[in-house]
Amino acid sequence: MPQLRVFAVFFFCGMLIACTRPAVGSAQDIGQPVCGASENLAVCFFANAIPQGDSDPAPLLEALRDAINLPLEELRAKRYTDVMGEPNKWTFEQVIGSVFTGSVRRENGELNDPDTKGFIEAVKQPEALPVLKKILEDLERHM
Image 1 (cartoon, rainbow, N blue to C red):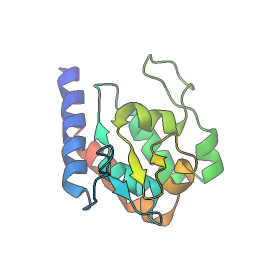
Image 2: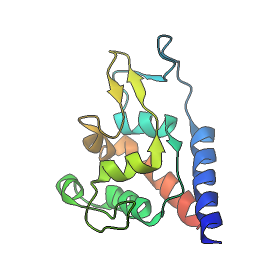
Image 3: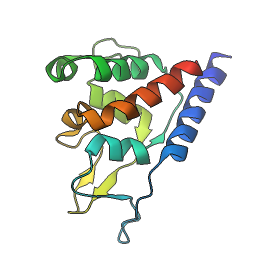
Image 4: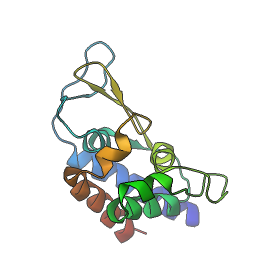
């Protein structure tokens, strides 16, 4: 029964992202979504990311809350439980990368995913806050 609940959370999260995805083009050479050079890396990533797996949603919920509430340096230093249940192992970017798959190609050809330099800084920008809050609220509502 807990697995069904976790599946339902990830299914809903996938539907949320798919339904709130802004209109973006596709990179013709590799079929990836393209985001403008001036678009926020995190907003663009979350708009195009696909939830994966059936892992424990607790680290994701904690990471999203921290992204909303903690200053950048504290978020950067924070460590979360990994998929094996080991506490204090993963960075914010690793938690996000373990739950969401996909990358977005920038207009300049660079890939954008949670491992991209500047991703965590983009998460802390004002334009990313409503996206993070919406994902968190919807996940909490369906837990």
